[in-house]
Length: 335
Image (cartoon, rainbow, N blue to C red):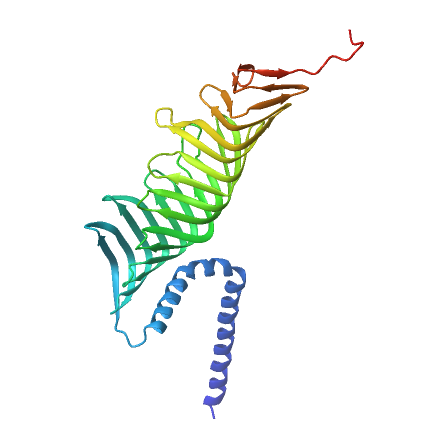
């Protein structure tokens, strides 16, 4: 009988302590759910990929490894090499990898590096899927960010249907292209990188704010030259232009873009000047602009036509080859 009050006393304190622990835990969950979710995202993606693999391959022997390094060869040369912190695989060579990095080779040079939270390798096709914070970096300094990536071994391409953000290599003007779009395509054999839809890009060029929209953007791993196509709209300071294609030429000597070439149905406006032509060349080093292919310029009431129209010194001087100038007639009684 003497022990019963003691037992009640112990249960009471235990219950209060348990309630205190539960309160503290709930407080942490309520106050900082985002940080907890972020810290577990990579592990959750890893576990989901493992579960999916196990469901597809029931009865297959499982293998686990730490500090994984895989080298894949094809056509008598290295195709890619892969590094991962952790890997879970099956006897039929289906692998799920955690904290993965892959270097893709062309002509025995590691031209592209891909990294992400979780990777999956199909041992039969040699295809690779990257999930979570997927990044693709080129040897010459382009960096693409997507949620997921897929490497298709037979075609030697890296693709993504996700939204894409891109940072281009720096130049003399400062930051490179800052670009957003949709659908990434990297052709390892051709050494090209493309964003296939909804292009929007910004940059500083010769101290002027630059903005461009287009359907598609193409880049190369061999230089910093770039091209945009499909309903191109470009803004450079007060100069606005529309065309179907825009190519940017880069000088390794100057460490900057030196020329912009716009083609097909070119229409531009600059202050009170309007013009149309088939081809417009902008020389950024000489501050010169050349119109070719039925060029026509309207400034106020004056119209200029010719085989070629050249604006020199930022448009302060005009040179016209085989000119045809139409001036507004003087009204009667004006003199």
